[in-house]
Length: 393
Ligand code: GLN
Image 1: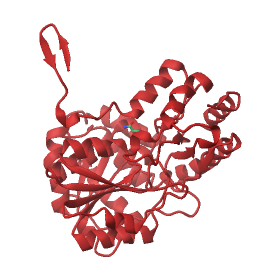
Image 2 (image 1 turned 45 degrees about the vertical axis):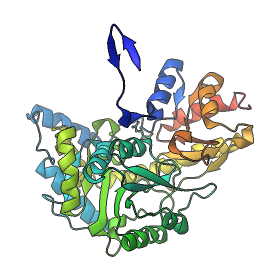
Image 3 (image 1 turned 90 degrees about the vertical axis):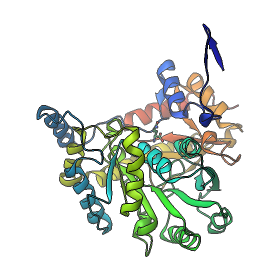
């Protein structure tokens, strides 16, 4: 409660207990202290030149007024072709594809469009922080299933045990932020079995779909037998084409699920940036191999960061996908990742993300996430700074 000149202002109870997102807090800290920012996950190099040019051309050609609420047709068609090309999924671009303002809006619209007050939503812990905020704003109740160190695998029994008579949804994320786990076909089958047995809808956030390493392959849940009809798939151009600031994402799946998302999204943003949509369509159609090439390039930077952090005495989980590596900081004498991350800019001039805000349980207290979607020189500079600092508690 804040009182100023006779005006009473308080945040709505639907936001009770929801803090400022850790990504904002840590990026502000990086700017304030001049630290190297290995916190918030955004690349420091641009996406394909032809995609950037397509956006400039779209602005010049006058694509500057509202796009249709469900997205411009060329982009919806390109998204359908992308799902067919990579995964063999056949989608009707008019009824089974919706353009969203980044995946974050897709998550918001999906939860607001589908979850009724009291409905339970199972999420993997550690979770992306927007899931918690949006489940709460929708009046839902979250149930967590923990991916535990050192392997961060999905335990099918724990998943099954999380189901109650009120469970209606699983909110899945693979490749998984922040653990870097890419769910295997067997793990996905376990999700499919539980969803089928208890008649659950699965909302799956696949924004790192192309950023997998070594021989780890992303399998969309929607491709498993019988799963298309109960799966809403969310993704975006941000990670695949290094345009996180464009905020162009999409929801795909059966028409009844997609239209429930549209029912909510029409009242959130109504539509997404008009000139960016044909540019993303250009990327999907004309630069189809760019995201995989980025994945290969990222793998080298993953190794640079992970080897460097391991060399500093941190216990590193080498991720199978995503932008991020998760480390256990206990070996340095710390038990609290938040405390460590708040001290790090001053100690070493580096920003990282504590994993506590992604947990209900204490499983993440001693875990810290580092982003490697940065130029190699930036990662090297961060490692040099860390090597020169006293990191002990
Ligand atoms: N997805 C990004 C991350 O995990 C953050 C996006 C955001 O700040 N909302 O770092």
